[in-house]
Length: 153
Ligand SMILES: [Ca+2]
Ligand SMILES: [Ca+2]
Image (cartoon, rainbow, N blue to C red; front, side, top):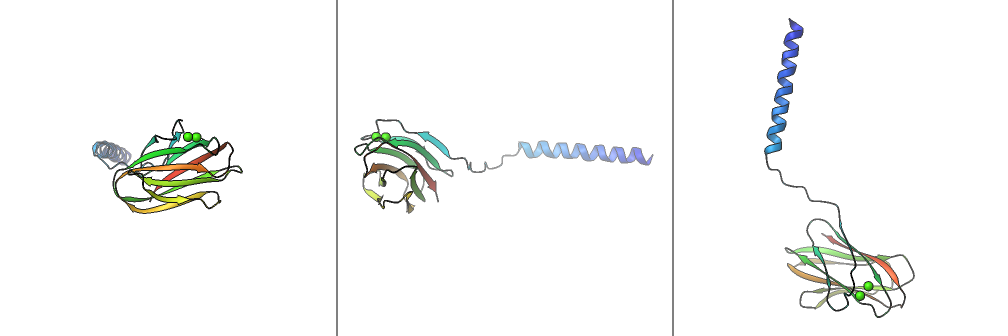
């Protein structure tokens, strides 16, 4: 008798848990921010018209490209949907000297990093909503693969 009562109690608890599970599944919960960066590959030509690489929300945008020589200019544009800070960084594995610039949608240079170091990076604080353009130039003259990371702050 006692064991039957225990069995029934366990069944009721299991059923209640299942119902609770169904109920919580049907409620709308906020989607947590996706920590996975968006990875984009460079597509030439991008010397004059920037290649659009997406919208910067809560995850980073990573761009893989190659600076072909000293006269290759690589431009990438991204949208900032609301005012926020972000950082931009370029890193590479090799002997080239790459430089990184950040311009706003009007083409005004907001930051330019040419330290001779690797990576080159900068952080822009409380930037208004809009379009931003990253520019990669090199002070050397060799083919050099690189990776840019745009990180929301
Ligand atoms: Ca290139
Ligand atoms: Ca280019």
